[in-house]
Amino acid sequence: MQAPGPPLRMPAQTSQERAWTAMAQSMAGMIGVPGRRLSGTGAWRTVIGMRHDVVLYQGEALGRYGFGGGHPFGPDRLSAFLAELARQGLDRAVRTAVPVAATDEALLRFHDAAYVRRVRLQSLSGGGFLDQGDTPAVPGLFDAASHVVGSVLAGAALLLQGEASRVFVPIAGLHHAKRASAAGFCVFNDIGVLIESLKRQGLTRIAYVDIDAHHGDGVYYDFEDDPCVVCADIHEDGRFLYPGTGAREERGRDAGAGRKLNIPLAPGAGDREFMAAFGEVEAFVRAARPEIILLQAGADSIAGDPLAHLALTPEAHRHATKRLCALAGEYAQGRVLAMGGGGYNRDNLAATWTGVVRELLADR
Ligand SMILES: [Zn+2]
Image 1 (cartoon, helix red, strand yellow):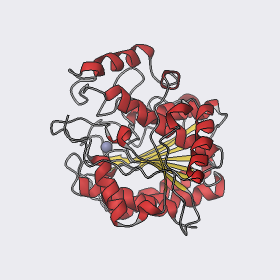
Image 2: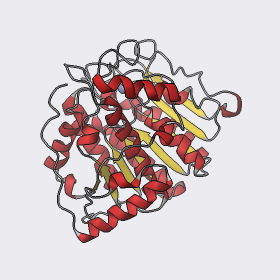
Image 3: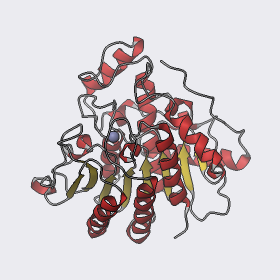
Image 4: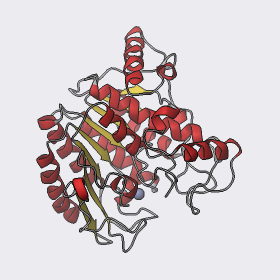
């Protein structure tokens, strides 16, 4: 496994920060994350001059999710983003929360028990793959993957309790993983676990918007017949890119018919095509009157990604974030949970995710 990059800054806690940590601890318990993992090292920062409390999950346990040896999803992605966030001075405007591991009980809300056991066993010593060859079982992968899920759940708990209106989990949005298998660099499907958890909390109108270059097949097919999950996915046309799905005609089925929107873009499509597609997404999400909005803000749809062929700029992701925050303000008590998703060009992911955070912070 390659070096995880420079150590992440963990400031000492003030009494106010300790109070935040205790609050997060009790709320995280409600959604099935073991609160004890938040105690002791939790670090929170105060919002400075910004109306919206944005909570950013960051820390070594999350940064470790990745695969070494030159794999495009390396463990250096988090530090690349954090360096740009600090360069633009936005690290001081967000509150920081330390990553938290999901319990087995939480993982099993979405995943098959035999699969969870297999990931745990195979990541003890590493070796082999968890799928057909994209997702290697590196040592420590179970722990890193369960921190991705746990951080997303803990962030959602803050939103549901009204303790934050926006959350960003940069290493998250692993939208290809299936209930019983890994796929496309995704071990546990944090989005799937979150949706199942939100439904248990009584939510019936959950909007999932995915602007990663790849179709979010692990979410789409699992909830294809579920009317509670409103999916809108803009991606590169599946005839040209993994996983090959997400055609226009795929609109959900049975009780979920009409509750999904897939918009494939041709290779080379840029911001003009994206903005037009996003107008359609916005109208679709608005019609659903969502109680919470989840955004998978994959940066592999930006021009210059080594694995995809779209040509967006970070402005596309800023626009999407801005519009979804406005929609959340109208219908969802402002609740937006954004996840970093894919993105394999480090400069692109750093610029794109920093732009997403800037829009999450904005007052509107
Ligand atoms: Zn992707």
